[in-house]
Amino acid sequence: MIFVFNGPNLNMLGLREPEIYGSDTLGDIKDLCAQTAEEHGFDLDFRQSNHEGELVTWIQEAAQKAALKGIVINAAAYTHTSVAIHDALKLVKAPIIEVHISDPKSRESFRHLSYIEPLAASVIAGQGAQGYKMAIEQIAAMVEA
Ligand code: DQA
Image 1: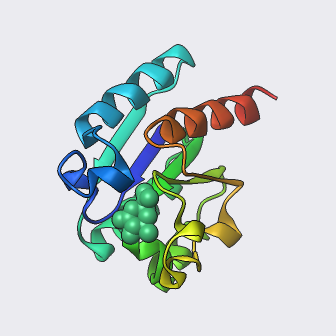
Image 2: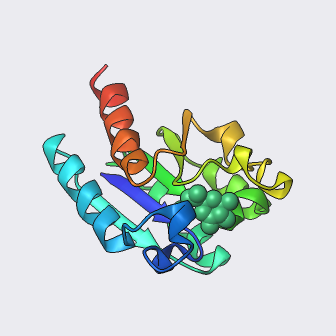
């Protein structure tokens, strides 16, 4: 079982700053993740929330699943602010892959700090929607190794 968690405003992909985030919608990304997970024989749970506490609760629940193989997380703006999401991710024993559609480190300075990065097995940024596919493939490689 792989969880893909998406933070605030990612439900607006396609409409939201397409010059930065591209034209793929979150539905397109969900389809890409479902296809990639299926290729590797993983069940997928793909979610988005605009609420920090809801993301924290979902991470807590995922951390307690015996079948958990990995978490892919694009915490969006909470990446740069959320000690609560950082603390929840500390419960997770399976690999965590941090994904960003854009490359936050080449944008405004307030996007340069990530509270997820210290807990992530890897960070995939600036690869657009393909970054999600790459993240699932990385988890597959870790599980199969
Ligand atoms: C983002 C980058 C964040 O800085 C921003 O707040 C987002 C999206 C990305 O996927 O590029 O909402 O996580």
